[in-house]
Length: 337
Image (cartoon, rainbow, N blue to C red):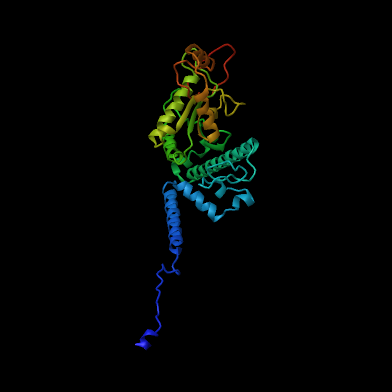
């Protein structure tokens, strides 16, 4: 009993705790995860609400971010971007601003002039190729080759000009009429498909020699005859396959524009002129019609009469007249045409 009373008493104390090695680290990791997910969904929303052009601008920016800053050229700085500011203007919200020098009005005009010059060059090249093709066709197609001397082709300030002229014993029209000879129809039918190959518009003009009608300009004259012949040629070209909408102008010029000015009664002055117009000539006609003020009927009538045509007649080219000696002054001799 004495020994039991001396036995030591051992007290065990158990400490209960939350495991110090865990702590709150998981909270930080979870917060990072939530932040990353928020950024991801924000990115997805931006991509979903951005147009295709904006996406291309963003892609260009990250592909070459310093291109505009270093060279001042077009590229990422010119594209619309969701990135705020950029370039010299930090207040700009949509896209960057190119750091290169902006074009002055003079530079813009020079650029426009260069574009116009290039378009004119290309237009002239097309007309030259058409000229070569027609010349080859005249050499290779028998129905055209026999009239080679009556087909005159050249390049003028208005475009490619094809003239079908009379010879003394081979007129293009019946005398004093707008009736085409059968071989004239063949020529026009051969030319029509080739004129369709270019988008350029067509101008037709008729010409006569200086031989007058017996009644002079008081009734049917060279003005009406040339106009009727030009219009007859237009109809025959369309019959041969020319697209009707390609014809922009049909005019009659009587003997006002002679091919052989030294010999006003020469058969070569009786001709039909087909012009494949260049863009400059075409624009000068169409734009003039669009911007010119509309004159009153009386003014229009006077303008037509001053040009030597009746007010109701269509403007077309002059017609053939048989070569004859010049009439005496103040006389009007009736001559076959």
